[in-house]
Image (cartoon, rainbow, N blue to C red; front, side):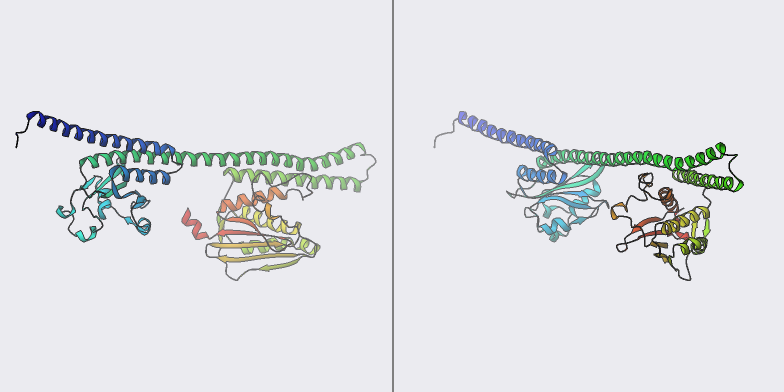
Length: 445
């Protein structure tokens, strides 16, 4: 056999070095491509789930593994699989790891990457029967860290060539984890910005509604003030111009009408001030225990003549034992009086006026039903809205009823309760008010 030519040996070494360098360069290029794809996917993916799925696909191809999972911390601090390949669907759906539990839980607890070239030779994992699914007996898990906190864990197992994971794989996966964490933060920030924008848009719409409602309220209040004021000025003008021709009875009649119109203006102005003070939160509010049933019975007695004049059928239901509520007596009396007044005013002659009280686990419920004018279902959500209550000045509604409903809503809100319309057949309207129990209010305060 002829001796080996030293020049051939040199060429052979050079060739092997070239092949090795080319493979290393190809590996670095693939790593750079993976990092590039990870960054591009963050910008091109429509949502976080799509991005994570695309990222896992890229990792599997670049690292050459059979299994890959990306886990994120939920609100309780445990890990759940957000994206995975090579795992059964039930495993993806049901896996939940607390800090320190399992491989990923250990990485979550320590915040350090975990590279295991050979499970059988690693003393940290005594019960190796739990790791039968690691076919290559090698695994790699790295944490997703943001501002010093571990937000998730990236896991790869079972290389396609069954080779163990090494430092190159660890370096690559650390870089991908960093890129993924940046993308996760970007998605979170974008989601927060979108949520803030949506809230701002809703607030703007609500503000525009309130501004339009306030303008409508001022317009209608001006109309309702102008009507009695015009009447007052008219009667005063008649009395002044025809004073010598008027006898005592005619003059007294004029003065009585002026007095009545003045009382109407006074009531409307008082209602306006009440509404504005309740809305601002600076109005007087002196709380004490109040017997709602007793106050309600007194209001029904006070309106007995009106009920009889319209021949209404009154049904008043109340159990023997009812809890008291914590409220300002004057405001509560106004609320009850306004509800009874509306039920009488909008009832039909001979109609039903039903008033029902019943205890609730969380407090007390009042139901007032009238069989007359029916509020359309589409108006049920807005009829108690502030600044939108009086309707059009040409609607023919009794004066002042709208602002009364606005005050009712403001009082109930101050009490911590609720007020709403409830449908009941094809005629009539029911109003339900729920008062919180006195003990519950004390606990909240």
